[in-house]
Image (cartoon, rainbow, N blue to C red; front, side):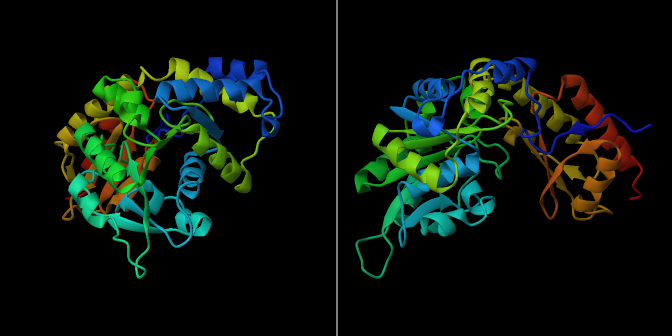
Length: 350
């Protein structure tokens, strides 16, 4: 009999709670393109308050949120500073170039974080041969750095550089609630260092769809236009905004459980033959597992073998596996995963 599937590929695979499903059924709706959907209006006001911004906009996804924010602040022939392994570079299908017509200037970071002095050195001087720097994009938590939290001191330093040069800061905060919970502070205390911010409702917060973009009222007016251009003008969208509202109300504090389970998973895997896990680097809900080069099989092959045992994980590099904890993975599931991985490795000839 096939073992129960434990899906650690991403925190996007979560199923909505019963309360979310009920909220979808009962949602009061209207035409949001006309600004008449009361549920969408309510979630936007709630999110803006939580993030400490003047206004917010409900969008379909994190990528749409990032691209709406970017296009509203940078345009053709202009430059955006971003960390070299940021989501907007790796996982958004070249949208910065395709939509805004801007170019990315990638800076190497340390666990996803950029030093303020590195950012300042990358700001272009006024020169007709060079594109003007218009925007700085930060990702918090940082996906490819294993869910790393950007230090507040770095955020503050980058914000000061941006202010000095008249440049805006956008924070890709798809998992920003994870950072806030891990640090034990309100999310607005992190969001204050960015002019605009995007937070995802369908990752750790477990809503079935949707993200929020927040910033000044003027920015949101422009962002709304870009959302429309990208096909994001929705009609009776309250049915999908309603579970997002439940997510904001009920799913934030429980992220601490995901963080605990990630640590538990990392500790359980760290001493297994052929694997390397830096337990200290696990700050939120992402665990990066390195498959040692001398091991008889590659990360890709190991992923296939684990899938056959009912453990779904994702490849994150030639020798790297990513495991992400979420609300549908319980403590006992973590113990089960450790056992299955142990058995899988034990069946591989050295």
